[in-house]
Length: 213
Image (tube, rainbow, N blue to C red):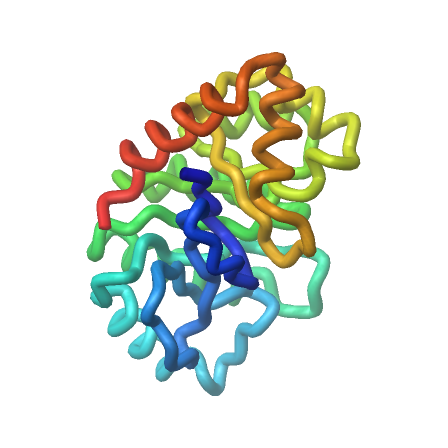
């Protein structure tokens, strides 16, 4: 079984277990999903109702994680407001014992500092990791997992990061890309110079350890 922990487009393949990214205002939750308030779509006037809807969805039997949520310095949204909403979602993660799938742009130090100050019991997963191995090491040292997607097919620094870190710290995803999860798995097995079967087994082990739904 291939595990895709974060996708916007279901493949509906019987070979793949996939967690669909959703939003609190969505209405269809018949397949495994994560749900969160993404920083791109933050609005003060709708936050209260979205938090109510989010908490409701987190109790659904198909909910595997909260997210994606996080911090983004590349958008025109007040950063303190972003932090406030992210912290509220961290608290919900702890209340409902759901891992957090994190969107982070230019704010990794702030994310690390929040993890240190909040001291969560739930796992935080940086999705769509595209940075270098030094940042990968820093995040892993602070207890994060990293999820890799389409960038492994293109980026030299991502390849170097995967080569350098342990397989027991990663997940695999397609996010919004038009590639198959199988292709990304194969690329990672090539980078690690191991068999596809070994990669599948390790991701399954990581998943079983972290996701409790």
